[in-house]
Image (cartoon, rainbow, N blue to C red):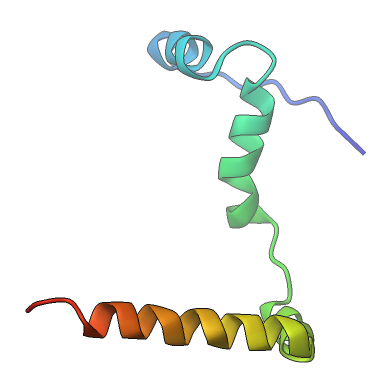
Length: 76
């Protein structure tokens, strides 16, 4: 469910939001910035569920091993 919220910001912030983010996109932009700070998920449970996905774990391991090889070959 969506709720409407009225906030007060400095006029420069207001103008910058309209210029940089654009009309009709400001709410989504602000929500994406604020959500991680106010909505806490149970990370331990999420990590446990991810670890049970064998296909995802195999892909993650392959990616990690490839990345390590790439970095190991770089000159120091």
